[in-house]
Amino acid sequence: MRLDKYLAEAGCGTRSEVKKLIGSHRVSVNGQTVRDPGQKVDENADKVLLDGRAVRYAAFEYYMLYKPAGVISASRIPGDLKDLSQTCVTDLIKDRIRSDLFPVGRLDKDTEGLLLITNDGALAHRLLSPRKHVDKTYYTELDGRLTKDAAERIMAGVDIGDDKPTLPCEIEIPGADMMPVSGSACLITIREGRYHQVKRMFAAEGLTVTYLKRLSMGPLALDHSLKPGEYRPLTEEELYQIRKV
Ligand code: URA
Image 1 (cartoon, rainbow, N blue to C red):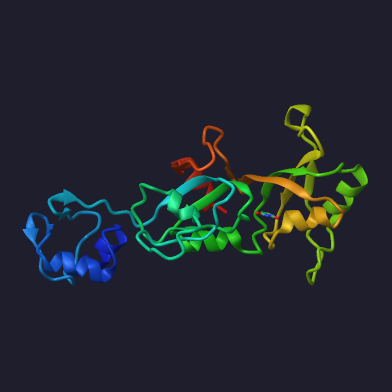
Image 2 (tube, rainbow, N blue to C red):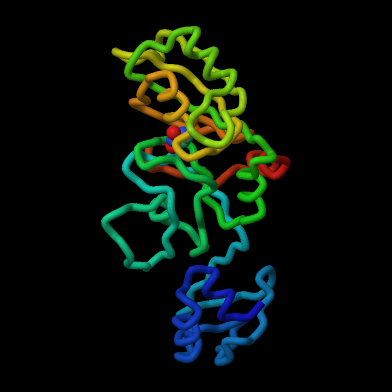
């Protein structure tokens, strides 16, 4: 690939910024200072240095983020000063290499939990495809009592004001150790990803979601050792499992 593309993808700056770095003779490939931004580099073999320091390159990155409440499910290019009043989920990935990371799907600003952050568009497309029906499980707290009848109606599929009712889903009542002090709690597994879907499904039964946390998405489960705002790269096993979706 071209050297300027390589450097930009390695997070060294925008295309025009890295062209300036090359023009200032700050970049070398295999020990030779390079002046041509179009010079070809082999990302698997060549040794690229910027100011004498090795440049880290990754074609793809995959992170499991424990999204905290208050952060929006959007991406920002590092160094982009647009709307700093809002923290984006990609701002939390501090030691990223790639500048083109984005969240796979969206969680509401007040929702917490598992979010996959990557730059692998094809994988994201598959995971989000309505035809794939990837399971998403949420721990949900409600402001009132979830009756058995209401849970059964929601599980069968409810009208939430869209063209079609929701697909059948599963609701499980967790043990007493997971119960909130007031109201009720459940685990709900849905196979779609409509806007505010879980909140709207309970609203159809007159219940307000007071807390929502995503626990899993397909084969990927939120790592219990992560705290809100923390992240880690996916393991090889997780990557293998998620690529099979
Ligand atoms: N359903 C919602 O209502 N909100 C989310 O963030 C995710 C699913």
